[in-house]
Length: 390
Image (cartoon, rainbow, N blue to C red; front, top):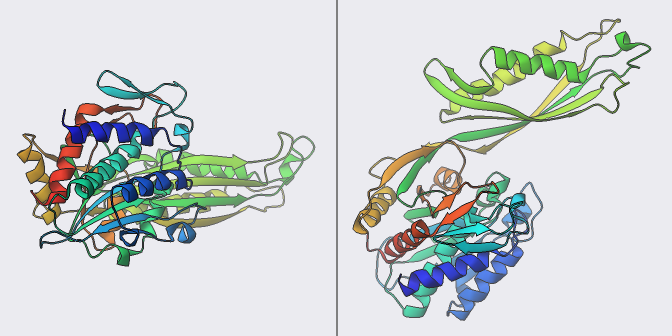
């Protein structure tokens, strides 16, 4: 094992032990800045934006950018990773077992998503700073609130980045798998208002918001608009994931709030899924009436979390990543993700970005692990990409 990879593994263990769920990344950012400054990064090279103030969710800190001038000319390259984790990682204690890092407590996840990427970037930046290794102009970006639906990168101040021409996002799975595209996702809140009544004395006077929701969901399931959706050569998914409603078993439910999502690699088909969901709930209103002929109401509030994208095979970032993997003896495989990545918004905002893994396994579960052999390979790939040797 090289000294570079030994240092990277030590950094990873330290980073995994720092709490930092989405919106609470300050301690992680403090660690990154401290290490960068000690390695010689100037205060001017390190900047934060105010993405946490523009986000829909409260946050402690914005995105962190380290910008380095090149020691030789070339297009600016950017390495990206998100610094936050999911709530299941709170209290995680990383331990090494063989060639894996696992959580010591079986009731927590590990935070490999994406502290592995965070560590890959930090280890690469520290080596360049300490050893004065030659490199083209570089930008390192650590984002916040990725687990909140990519809120950090969505609110990123692009002017901080220095106009990178090639971009590499380290997040998820094998370092030899290049994610060159990802689905688009739309989230929605559905609020149903019924009419309350005593469920024992006069249920016929009420309109149940829960009954309306049940009828709508059953229709979506029956007609193939819930779960995996395949229609007319198009493919997508939808899910009603949260239902909250009612106050007591003896009261006809006057309100119900549902949260749902729709995804597809085809924007027009995703919009068709959303319309099908909305229509099912509108039509369900007329099927639940009280003795006076009254029915309930429904309101929808939705937003695009991230747009879909697919990079062409000839994209410079894709070619560079393929070259780095092959230079290290690997065989790159390209794929498309059914989840969102920081690369979605970066690409949508004009910075085509390819994503590579860092050895994460079973992410967002209590069986989460880091495959250290793959993590070390990701560190080697990142160094090649940063130095322009691929």
